[in-house]
Length: 290
Image 1 (cartoon, helix red, strand yellow):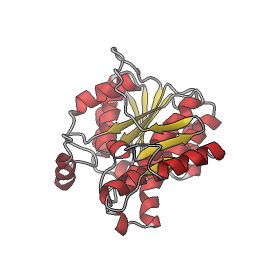
Image 2 (cartoon, rainbow, N blue to C red; image 1 turned 120 degrees about the vertical axis):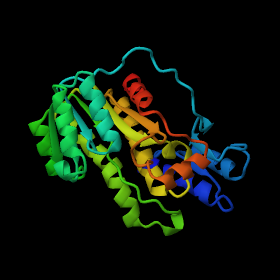
Image 3 (cartoon, rainbow, N blue to C red; image 1 turned 180 degrees about the vertical axis):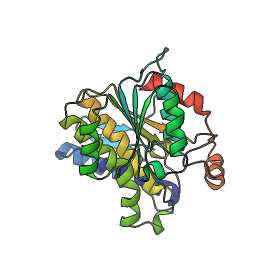
């Protein structure tokens, strides 16, 4: 939840620069040294020109991105049963084709509409022709009972959480309902998958979360989406800290599909200097990163 607030705050900084002060992260057990440093940050002396800082007893730290070179080679090799949420959508269907071509024996593709989703039947038949068993299930990813039943029926070796919705709007037009409407199918469903796979003791080869660059840089008009994806990033950190597999990928827009496929979204992200990625290259990077 704290990560979500931080993601929302980055968007506030973009939309409301004239009144925005910044973001300060403090530990839950902050002592007097921490609060002294917080006062220093607020007074403008302890953080210099930083507007996003973590304050700890040991010091004040700015936020940085580090370039990491992905390992060469194939990386994650799908096997057994792979669950893809949002599996009949633009990005999920591409992931499904990629996984089927790389060795997955069974694909479980979930969406709210299941086989009634546009192109779902054709996708199932296409993947089946590749020799992969395909299950297309109508499942609400936020329904604990439904997701539990699915995992009981199909113990999975990997999870790719590609489901999500958009409900763009500036912060002044947001509401608790709109925030929850984007949060639940993205971060809420991911946390549920985490809990249920851990409960079952599943040793997953990969737990891949389709996050967004909006959670990294912020995106004006996408406060709820940035918050939800920041929640995914935090979940990946939680799992990694527990010794579990997890990779959260902050995608930019994909060419030829996905939620950024509409002209207005492409135009908006293009103004920020982001161009659509080639889907095949993106999938290759997914395998190496996971």
